[in-house]
Picture 1 (tube, rainbow, N blue to C red):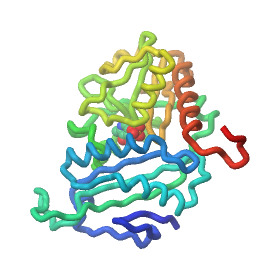
Picture 2 (tube, rainbow, N blue to C red):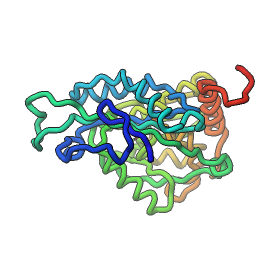
Picture 3 (cartoon, rainbow, N blue to C red):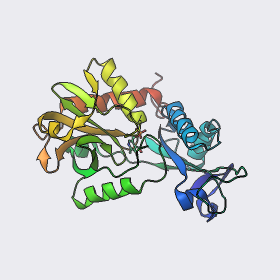
Length: 292
Ligand SMILES: Cc1ncc(COP(=O)(O)O)c(C=O)c1O
């Protein structure tokens, strides 16, 4: 049984009840956020809360996410996750409860705020080293993919298409451009540069994407933020997805064709290692570790 947060209270998950008139249920009128925690310490939580602030403001939902920093810590503690190498905290904010009508409620309603925390199992290094595969899927989402809305049906359908194709990730394609994954951002190494789609309205501005770009700049890798034509993937030496639950995931096959030599490449390896070092530095020591 897990302990969750609902509208100001920590309570057992089976006691957490949401109204059938909640606009999140009726219209997917809300946003969500997923923040990783490493040995109980939320990583880059301020960046996640900033993205949340921006989404709330775009949707005109009146909620200040600042108190959520404390909610993250309380959920991690209440669920005994301080010692977990990786856990995630999920937060969802909807416009609230009102009789069903498309336009916003005319009298102010209190947003519904729900959150839970759970352990996350990072894949074994041996699995990671074999690499992953992806399937290209048409991007059927709306033109505000930069807002992390709970309306994820096109993402679910895209990932299901990948699963039914026997691959790990969906690579969303719009007008011949490889944008991002169903739940992660996409990078390719082309002509020696690390290339990823610019942070426009057609992709989610991933916090991991942003961190991986910083890691590229720090290590002197050449970076290009520009659209990637699907045809260019034929000459990419590497490809990888990034995300909170993806970290840096190397893609060695897209639509059945090998990427580069079909093996996990040096850039993905360097970036995943740098990512792991970065989160290690930001995490509390393990019991018995010598002081840093
Ligand atoms: C469509 C999409 N792109 C990218 C990401 C990666 O974002 P982040 O690195 O903040 O997890 C996500 C995460 O859920 C996503 O849903």
